[in-house]
Image (cartoon, rainbow over all chains, first blue to last red; front, side, top):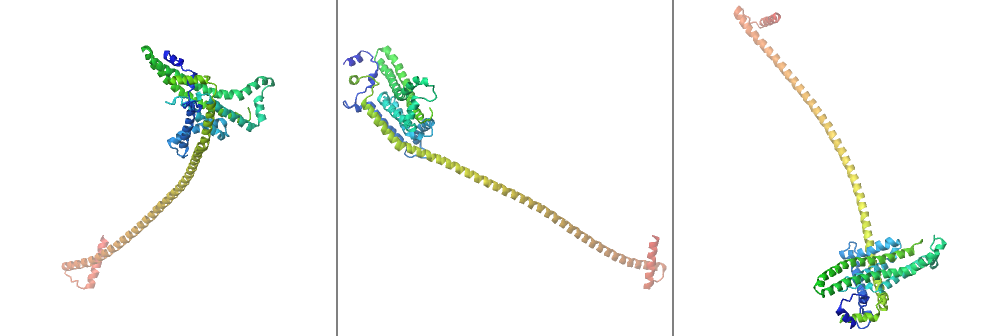
Length: 259
Length: 179
């Protein structure tokens, strides 16, 4: 009841608690909004691309062209340009990664959904774990476990005393920094963006309930919220791109013979 | 009322946003794997098929165009050759015609000249014959007249044909001499 009273007394700013959405059905933790959104995105992406790719026509329809544009962006501009001649093996993964992150990010500004799934840290963790496992697996398979570990720990072409400094850094980079930055970058961007939108839109709503002077200020808060929505759109696309690009870079590094 | 439920639930869970939720980890894993399987089996091969077909179509089209161009070049060469041949032939025919025409004209001219000469000769001969005839006739008439006249004047009968003729001849010879 204290919370209820607080919201009556004054403005309660949006907090991290706003991201802990309750389960829709009872206490079942598998029925929260982010869970539904994640599955909804799977259905949405699958249906869109299956319908788009179904005909595989030489002269594409507008619909096929739309799907193809996204696919060829990931395939050519991300996978092929970054990974090189072995890129085709990784296209399905990178394509899934890009579309999954992009769609779930965009849920943050799509009316009525309006919640970026990736602002729940579990999802970026899972995706980063996939990338982590994949690029290590590819490197071990390509170079052999010993050679790979040796390459990480003793970077060739470096004076021996530098290893004291470099080896811990390299180990941390490969096994901690990469997966953590990958997931946290995505999570933090979505989290902060959503919080920002909440501040301006809930703030505008609260101002509207205040005295006449505050009512006049309220449209500015809403206008800023709308402007930030456009900004968020950019960030959401960019984060999906960065996550996929970095994954491609890590895979390319795993396949590269020289460091 | 929703607000209360909302915040109470959140407070119960603990608000640290960096702590993952087991349920969400599982869901993320399943959802992503599911999407990966669908896209890998249904979407990527189809798009690749379309790309390959397109590449092939473009390459096939280019080859076809190349072939067509070669064909066109060949035809052009052929037509040019034929045209040159035809031009040469026309030139030859014209030349022949000119030569032939000249020959025909020359021939006709010669024939005409010959004919003209023949006609002229015939006319000359006819005129000469007529003149001769006229001279003879005139001579006879003049002789008769002159004899008659002289007979009348001289009173001498000059009926004898032989003498008469002699006198006339002498007279004419005198005339020619005096001239």
